[in-house]
Length: 115
Length: 111
Image 1 (cartoon, rainbow over the protein chains, first blue to last red):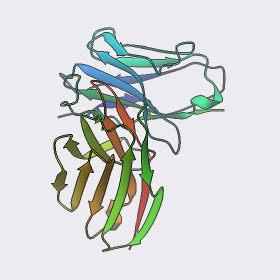
Image 2: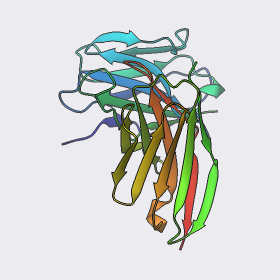
Image 3: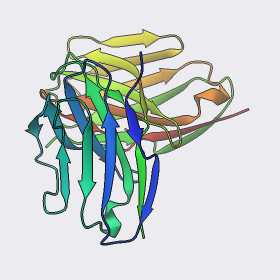
């Protein structure tokens, strides 16, 4: 079974530029999560989708971050404009369904450096 | 708000030693607790998941315990190997959605 795929793996941009990350979840998984992991910290949930609907985006900085999952499969996370403090690893995860009995599977992450 | 703390932040041990990693959380109303491994430049790999009704889980040389009432969990690694070197994260699930992560323990096993 293929795991969660993410691209690109690394990205370096200057502040005020825009960037987009892509995630392809495990086939058949209805729930998709985006996490932000700043160096030395644990991952923090940014947004959760159930199929193509948003379940939780309370931690998403909506003035600069946006995410979509139009067809309920792949998802993109965008930052516009980027700030220095956005430097982090962005992890995508998926689970068969939402809820504590369904394990989350994580992708390799995209490491973003904002200079 | 749930807060998860992991001690120590870093640990170096000689190969073959048994070791214990600690995790504590402030809100005992959890559904489950999970231990993850993270290698440099890689994503998270789930090691053990303990449901709130369970006391411990074992997988190979790993054993995780959960004391929900005191807000503590430990991950025991027996006979450590250099390949165990990684960052270990614990996370608690308190609702339908959210995993709250600790900051991790960076383990180095010296050959």
